[in-house]
Image 1 (cartoon, one colour):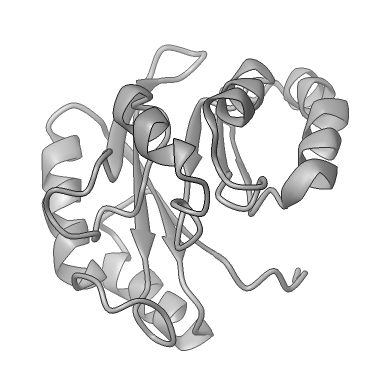
Image 2 (image 1 turned 90 degrees about the vertical axis):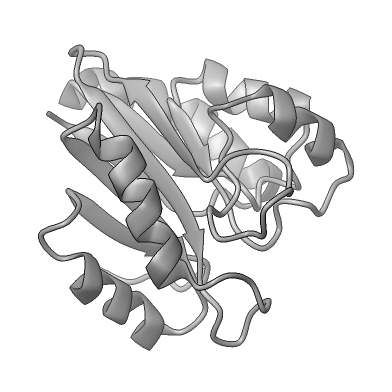
Length: 179
């Protein structure tokens, strides 16, 4: 399976770049599944979310900016492919995990999490992620985690913690280009 993950899409320039590059990238590399962290795309609105999904993104993850536009509250409740961090408290609209089907027919579980170091005081991502994994594992062998966190150390800890439990863990949020 060929999975493409796109880190934080930032504002209109990020969406424009996605529009210009994603369709060709998917075709050229025969990508089976696309995940993008879309929380910085100028705040999530129905219009922006639908644009991103129409370009070929299969699931959108998020983080601390998910609620920057009030329209997100309505949209996240009706669009299951837009994930808010799974470790937000119970009762918050939306879902933190989603089970999708890839272009090659495989089930893929996607989890969105948010760190706590230098960020909001929300539920413990380390305990929440295990519950989400158990829920998704019933129907998906492939599980992908986007850990939206400030501290590199917290991202590394999550990677080590989930080693052998999921297919991939990526870290987003810091907006620093690294290789």
